[in-house]
Length: 367
Image (cartoon, rainbow, N blue to C red):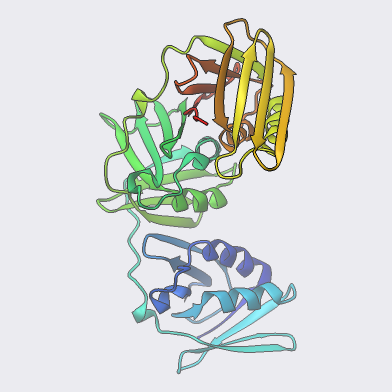
């Protein structure tokens, strides 16, 4: 088998594939990518057995066939090549020769027969706006837990129902919720999907504002297609927590403040906070916010700013990282903080946002 491919075209697709390749190398062939040639097209497949990507690019070839090649070596070779045509030649002993100008490489490949079976894309699927889905992922993905043992929290809950799309994530200390009206038909009832964090991260890389995202599922897998590229992901099993119980309903003390100014002030205050949880004390009085952080052996910081607040004084301790994660993805000039008391979760929202219902909940800390 022999084919020619443009270096830049191949590098773009390999970069996407490298995000999915098995990193732990528990099964040797999962460190390889599958190269499949047919009809002047090179299909590239990578998988870690939980997530699979299929992408590819146009080539020049009169052959067809398939081989698997070590992904890291192939990526480094292609990355360091000049912008030119690369010649691939697969020999009978599964060695792959790569030529470009004065450069010549030979890599030991493995036959396709040893590679995991690729799930077939389902026929029944719905189409979502990539702009909407990308925005929703970016507003929630940071609140997914880092603890692998909390299996059902290792992804996002996606709910489609009654012309609405909703995404929710939580790590047990905070919760991100975003909802938007959409014009899609999902049939009767409610569709609920648990999408792993890695799947969301790789999906973000595929999405383009000019393309829609096709989505389908079978008993075990979720299927996403963006243009010619596909992701196939296992679903997360189990029951996502009842997020509606976490969203505050009676937080009546409202603070309104400038998004950018607050973000900068919290970052400065957090410099002197303890590194593990970054606790910052928020002290609210009439139209005034003071933020205080301290570390016993290093010192303290104090930040003050004017805000819109007319209620009783309140002091509450929040994780600075949790606050700045939210502020970083807010696009409105102002944000609101809704409090009940010093021990009840705080509700953060963008001010006067039209298209999305975005709610972010942070549990207070005790220090």
